[in-house]
Length: 255
Image 1: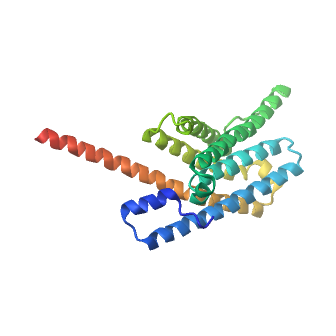
Image 2: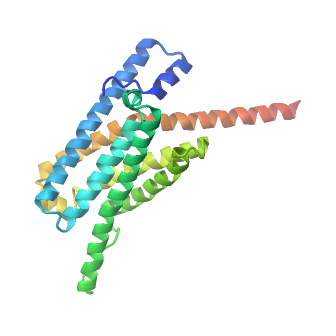
Image 3: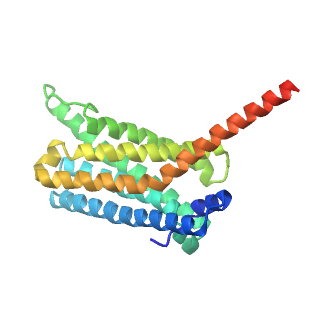
């Protein structure tokens, strides 16, 4: 994936008149980040999925299994593939959009399934023992997870008109990017808090938990790196456009 130049990046460089050396350097940098992201997202997912399968998906293992596949792997890959010039050349723009949409939808469906499993288990425990203390969405892991799910839902909904071509609004595109980016960030924060839960402490030694947190943090940074850059660029463009329009209106009023 190091051959990624990333089409939006190249377009922006042309507009800004940057040198070819700067363009190549930026392409190599983002391509390297993308490669690291693919490796870490896959490695983290395989390690956790393997442990959950060994546990036969019993109790929290089922929750961890589906949430990791959905929120870590599918959602991370959905962000990465959308900006891949290599895949766009290989698959075409339309098929790349389809791949991005499929991965995003799988992230939501599979991940929400994992959340549903844990919620159902808690409800069943409360039903079997009314005196049991069952907490719903009170921990940091659960709080960031449920908020991240809400943002992911916003990403899916805002992506529908974009996918079917019903809207080319810059506002919808901005909201879709905001929901997807912030949703992934919060879900990865939830993932890191998940290593501190009772399930995480029972299944992995303290140094393994630290390694998981470290690799998850690096995977988060390298995955959102380019998308965050585009998000900041969009904000700057919006602010600049607003200031320019305000100045134009003021100028006409002064005439």
